[in-house]
Image (cartoon, rainbow, N blue to C red; front, side, top):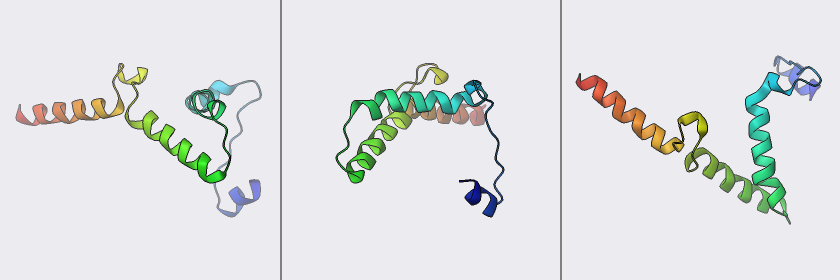
Length: 91
């Protein structure tokens, strides 16, 4: 990994040991994915794992309510945002 990063001149920053909140959003997502998808299924093949993870990701990104969006699904939030923009243009 470090060779790949160095070859591509990608900045590399470590999270301090015992400080997972330095990367809280990713840690939260990883925990949800692990609890709701990875721990719930046995994957007999890589193809099956890819399908199940893609389905979970689609549900997570489009259909499930998010507390950060005031309980709206990303689709509802997107629609509301578009309506708000239309109203702002009309005013």
